[in-house]
Length: 240
Image (tube, rainbow, N blue to C red; front, top):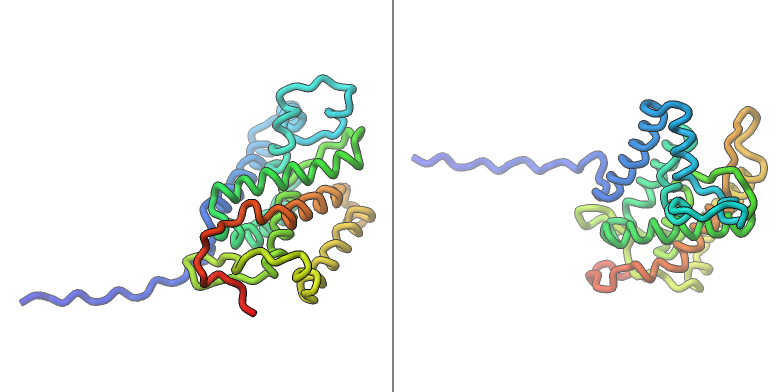
């Protein structure tokens, strides 16, 4: 007699259904901050900060250009000023980065992160070329992901193993005609400028680099077509 094999119960949906590259970036940002706050002395942290954060005045001509001048436009995006700063950014990264990474794939997504991070500090530098205040945080790259999301009309396909943005990037004119997308973008822009100019409120010393956010956003909005997969299945075509 042969016992019949019982069918296995269907597996439940994972709680955190994020692409591996997004999980890796969250772990990297959290690991860097943990290392700075737990393992480093104050002197070591200050030295590390100078070598990894983006300082606009480094490029003003008053200082020697060293190796770190070429790496900080990227490495700054893995540093954060506080656990709150880190936590807020990682939540947004999970929300906007996951469907974008599922759409682009790990390599394209990392390249997108690099390009939007550089674009964010580029605009910040244009407006604050002689500033000695260091700029840190993944907000520029995450703002780029929001810009890319706007080009997809925030439409997400959930039929695959991981949710991904659906359809080809919309023409700019179509984005402008979308009331829902433009409302989101207007609110996002107002909040960024307001918090950058007024801050979070009394007792909060961290400055919000709203210029970097806008630089990253517009980079992601306009260059997403460079990174998007051209061979996606027809099921990803936008609905009319």
